[in-house]
Each structure stands twice: as structure tokens, then as C-alpha cells.
Image (cartoon, rainbow, N blue to C red; front, side, top):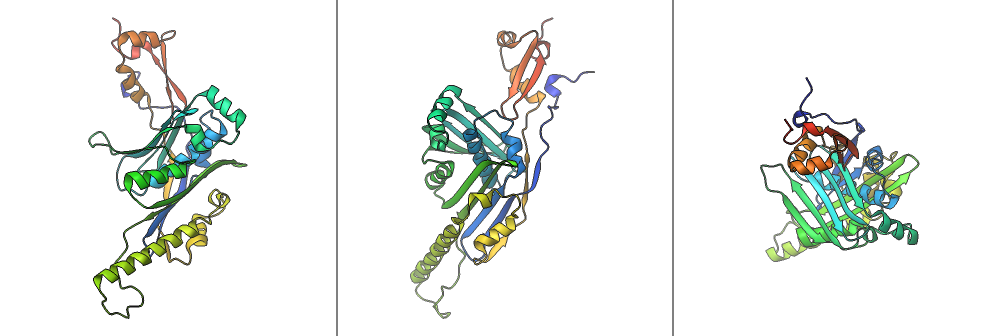
Length: 329
């Protein structure tokens, strides 16, 4: 007996790609700094090549995937963390998300004619030239039983790293530094990210007090100064990272982090896996179709078949018209 569409959880074959050490968390002991290093490896190529997009759009998509992977692993939740950019440029919509288990997916919507015009004049446009003016939204979705937490800011800056930094400064009021990189290499597309976050400083006695207890205000000022210096030092060191290092599969994450922060009492945590993670299925798309009026379903059908495309994995799902809606007697 054939499984009804609304119960059919099957889906077409998609790349079975897992990067065991995709995200490496770390912190600098005694300093107000924690961070994540993200290396998508061959997963970037598997995700980006599912879409027939211009290299500039793929590069922005790779950076978006690395960013959501970095941010999702900083939260303790079950659900997904998503980045959405909507603008009036040739790339009208970009969406990337990552689940708490490290499953990534990506899609983009572009105006082919406007994009071709832009690329004819400028083969290497900035991220802002692709998106135009609009907004950037970051969303935490913990499922249908909870309210989504979403922050939205106006697009600001020439690249995605600057846009995300603007978000943290204005929406979260949270000190953050990050760099993103994505490009096509001889081995295929690669993408990565390094993100630093300033966290609350631990208490203690400032150097030079000889164990005595100075005025509480002086202690607070001294601690704040030490924390500021530690944060500034970490950012200066992070800025020495090159895109080549960030995207080099042969350079282990621990080695790269040691290069950057070995003098700052680096502590590296357990790495987390990332994977190809589109969550579409025939059942989910059948549920979408069931919401359409019968006349619309009839109009959508061609030769008795309705085709629904998953924009994330770029796969067509086909349904017999009799499978969905109020079936004719």
C-alpha cells in the first residue's frame, strides 16, 4: 500500500556530508574573551553547488553559513538559528540556518538580469552591492511551542562581517569581533569564520596592589582597564588571521588557534560537527499544498502532477493532483 503524501517522510538523496570538527570553541583563561573557529571544509562545496548562482552570491552564501554555524553553537537551545537578509539589490533574499545539532542549509533569490548588469560592470561586487538597502535579521526558533526571538537591523557596511557587527552593536549591545571568508579553491568551495565575544570579567585583585584592598572604585576601574586591554589584545591578534589560513583544510583548528593566541592562555574546547541538513520531506510540502484552495491546486497541476521545489536543496517533489486537497469523487 502506497504511503499517503501527508505521512511520507521520504526525500530525494542529498549529499551525506559531515565535518566532524566544524566548530571549535575556545576561551582565553582569565580574560574576558571567548570565541569559535568555524571551518566548513567540503561541506561548503556540497551546500553551495546545489544552487546555480553566480560566484559572488555563492561567496556571500558561504560566509552566511559560517556565521550561523558560529552563532548557533554559542547558544544552549534546541531548535535553529537563522540569518535572513532582504534587500532591494540584485540579491533580494538570502537565508541560512543551522540547528542545534549542526545541520546547515542555505538558499538565495536573485534577479538574474540585475545581477548580470552588476557583474558586467563589476565582476567582484561587495556584499552590500549584491544586497542593496534593506534589513538583516537573526532569529532563534526553538519550535512551535515557544516564541521566536528575532533581532532586525538595517543593512550597514560593505560586507557581511560589518553587517553582523552592526547588528551586535545596535540590537544586542554586545562587543563582538568577527571575520568571514569564502571562496572557490582547487578542492571546491570553502568557507570559515572566526568570532570573538567579550564576556563579563572575572573578579580579582589588580596587579600592583600587593594584596591590599584599595578603594572599591579604584579596584573596579583597574579591573575594567585590564579587561579592556585584554580584549583589545585578542582583537589585534585575531586580525593577523589570513583568509588562506582560515580556509586551509590541512591546517588543524587547534594549530591555527595556537598560532593566534598561544601567549594568551588559550583553552580549546571540544569541537562540534557540522552537516548537510536540509529538513524538507514530501510530508512537509504536502502539508503546504493542503493549505491551498482547490482552484489553485487545479491551476498548479500540469498533466495531473503538481511540482514543488525545495529552495534549500534545489530538489523537485512531484505530487499527483489526487494526492492533495479535497479529492474529486
